[in-house]
Image 1 (cartoon, one colour):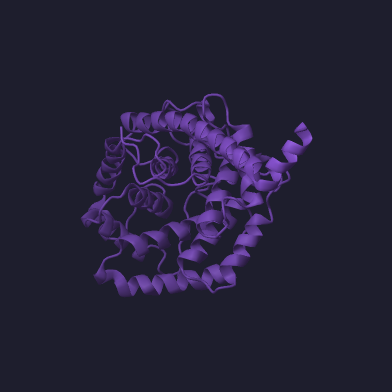
Image 2 (image 1 turned 90 degrees about the vertical axis):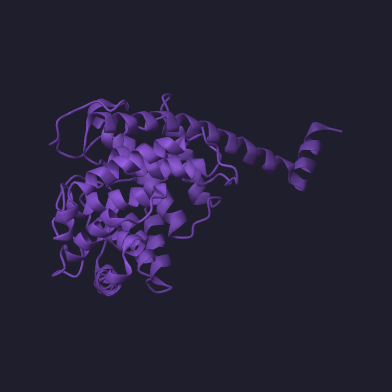
Length: 338
């Protein structure tokens, strides 16, 4: 049979597309496997050198770890437990302060990301998580929503990020005794979300997540998803700002939000374009490099993750990118446990 006719028959009956999908899955698995190692090193390195929680070294990497683990990748349960115990110990040092409405460090952003990390890791509610929720109920109560206190873009500068983190924490960790006050805070945040307009990718990502969280109207969440999707670049990625190049932080977070809250299928052409961008920009060491836009204020230290003074944003970016890649793979009932 002539080769051209054979190729035509194979394409007609669908074998060629299946082979392409398999090749894509192999590329994603290889990239994800490479990404997990530096993420684990950076997470472990942080708790060896610091006593405080770090969203860049612990939160988004935790999401990548558990998402990959659900798809059969090797992630040790004891390593996740170590991370969560570290976070709870840090929060517990201020348990009385939380009950009185006094937070720590990055306030809502820090507390919200800490509880989100515990949720992703499977931690159970306890007196400490309830105390942090109490703080969130009191924080910015006069505004009817939450405001960040830091200006450390992209992850600690957005009102939308702060509100999503608080809303998710109240929904997940609130006690029965706090239920009525939680409902009032959710109503206030919902009213603000419906009026507020996003200005950059971080805003659009977390506005979409927050609108989904508060159960916004049936037309509102799809419109927010379309708005975020509409800012995808020709290269398949997203930029943090309109005047910045596409990068792994903006691209990974956008893909995760679109899939988790916007209902975008991972097989959709737009999602696949984003995946192609991430695969193309991953470095040989498994990480993604993103340049920091934040003014440093903490004492510099090496966590074990590459990129030196850009390591924190790059680690968060690599966590988002790894999660976005992992979501394209089928889950397995027998997650690998080293």
